[in-house]
Every structure is written in structure tokens, then in C-alpha cells.
Amino acid sequence: DGGITQSPKYLFRKEGQNVTLSCEQNLNHDAMYWYRQDPGQGLRLIYYSQIVNDFQKGDIAEGYSVSREKKESFPLTVTSAQKNPTAFYLCASSIGTGGVVTEAFFGQGTRLTVV
Amino acid sequence: AQSVTQLGSHVSVSEGALVLLRCNYSSSVPPYLFWYVQYPNQGLQLLLKYTTGATLVKGINGFEAEFKKSETSFHLTKPSAHMSDAAEYFCAVSEPRKTNFGKGTSLLVTP
Picture 1 (cartoon, each protein chain N blue to C red):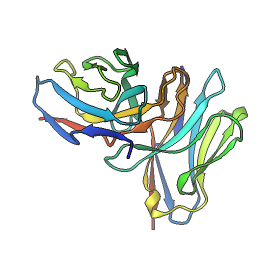
Picture 2 (cartoon, helix red, strand yellow):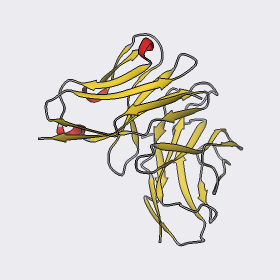
Picture 3 (cartoon, one colour):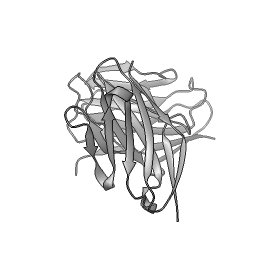
Picture 4 (tube, each protein chain N blue to C red):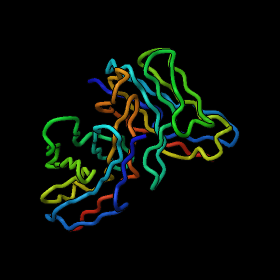
């Protein structure tokens, strides 16, 4: 079945550590996205990518980094510069023609907790 | 930038009652509008979408929404709530290359 796989489902990070969240899709979508979800704040866009080797900052990119070396993969690194990383992280993809997004497909999310 | 505002962060209905979740949008061009549903600790799933054409859009699980340009609204309804409808619902609007989400409405269904 086609879909988006995020791993791990739960992740614990110590203060000062970098951690990387995995996102893989087999939908053959060009566009991929990372969102952060906090209670009562909806989904906020961290980074997005329309094509391999290219990505753009979203609304809350500070303290995060991404790469897009393969069409199928869009890993997110939460760096030590992110002061409040505890949140639910969602990866999504869409067909991505560069025009208006017609539908986003989501992974099951990764819950990151700082310990 | 295009945006949506969801009215009411929490809505409670009785089982069998009408569900109405409100969403207003702000857009300078004809919008693409969506409703997504999220169950606890899961990703989002598309309920329905409006792109062009018929303004009354039917989705999964008996939900529907009506695009009203004059009111800049895209409210979500279901005639009869079921316990399994309890979830978080997000209204969203797309613009080139990305989607902007509302803050969400948590639907509680009581027996």
C-alpha cells in the first residue's frame, strides 16, 4: 500500500542533543512537508520541499534543519538550538506541481519529548 | 497569505444530534478549502475538499460542507453525530506550494 511512514513513533531527547525524525513516502509525490503540532495551536509549517535538493523555510524553521537528497525521503533534524522541541511532528506529501496544493497525505506522526 | 479561522476550539454534541463546525477563510483568489480529521496520536485524514464546481461537497463518514463565497465560510456538518466522530477537526486552505491550517476544533460526542 502507498503511504507515508514516520519513525520513530515516540522519541526522547536530552537537553542539548540533536535528533533526526524520519519520513519516507512511496506515493511518488514531489512535494513534502514538516508540520509541528502543539495543543490549541493547530499545525505550523516548519519546512517544505517541492523537488529533490530544494527546500524552503516555513513559518517556524528556527532550530530545525532538513535535507531532500531523494524524492522518497525528507528527514527533519531538531537541533539543540530549538528551545522548546517537545511536540507532535507530522510529515506530509502532495503531488506538488508548484501550483495550489490539492490534497496533503499525512504520516502517523512522531511525538518528541525532551527529558 | 490565505488563512482560515475556526470558531470554537471545543464543540460538544449529543449522540444523534446535528454536528456543525464553523470555518471562515480569508483569500484574495478563489480558494481551495479542506476539512481534515485527526484521531488521538494519529496523522490527519482528508474528510472532504472544495476546489471548483458544486458548492456543496460531500465527504466520508456522512460529513458535508458548503462553500459560501458571500459569507467566506466553509462550515462542516453532519446530520447525526456518532460516538466515533469524536476527534479533532481542522479546516485548511491551500495556496501555491503549501497548505495553511486552522487551530482545530475538538468534537466531543456524549451518549
